[in-house]
Image (cartoon, rainbow, N blue to C red; front, side, top):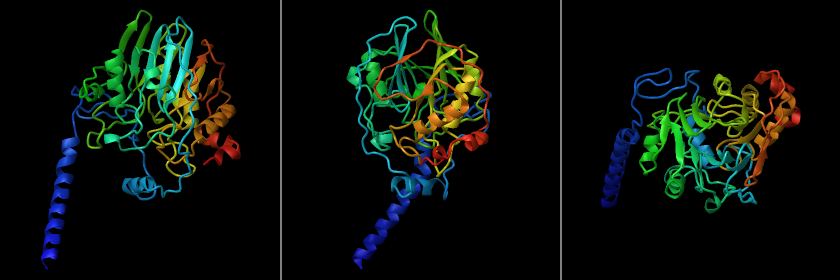
Length: 386
């Protein structure tokens, strides 16, 4: 009897604590990272996509809770991924001078771009997992460049505050070692500042000079932001144009298609020599080709066409398992889509292998192909990819 009474009291306290947590914790985890006047993408409290509200993944089969449970327990029928992918890195040069450009894919959305004597790093993540408190998807491939083999970094671009793009541990190491210029969008400076990492936060359209003839422009894309769910859209997401002699660098960050006009807007800043475009995490149900927050190869190819880019590297795949598609589905599907669309120069790069980027050459005219029409034109083998 005494045991049952103690058990009942214990259960009651657990219920009380859980109720308090549900009531208090979300408010505690919410934070206002930026305060300013309302704009066409900011309410005065939270940011939003001006091209529509579809800024989140809509999990199938019972909503978020069921999706998360099936994901964590590996019971959603996902194709099997390798537990480990071998990486054979080649040390990048210390510097690349003049208009020569070398790009090295480190993994996920992290790319080292070297040109004009500058070392530019996008969304640097060297941590083993992508998530809060070390909990989250674990990388299946080691970084393509060991952190200690990384040359001195001059410029870092941070697209938004999701853990697989804003890795505070890595950013702190970079700041302490190299003191780079870190450029981001509004509100993200507050998140990084909490660990002593200063950055320059700009609104879409904001510019910052790096050196004569080189500037970073923060540009629009279509996504959302959060560190703790409750702080949803308190910080802005973005893509970037790095204006360079000989042709610009475009880094899309993490983006869904939206109206895709963000690509046209980026192209207006000048010829795009190299486009870094996400091609993975687009499938959350069998056969799905696009998600509200992530573009797949079909939309990536259309964005590449709109950018008028002469070279492109598909990123945001093959490092952290975030979705339903098979490990190598993104690059295989990208190759099929690019062939059908008639675009050239857009593919993937091997992890840790420095890639020489060809000088800018204006692409020939390529007619747009609507997503549904593209799916009808793709070979059956490409459509059958897991």
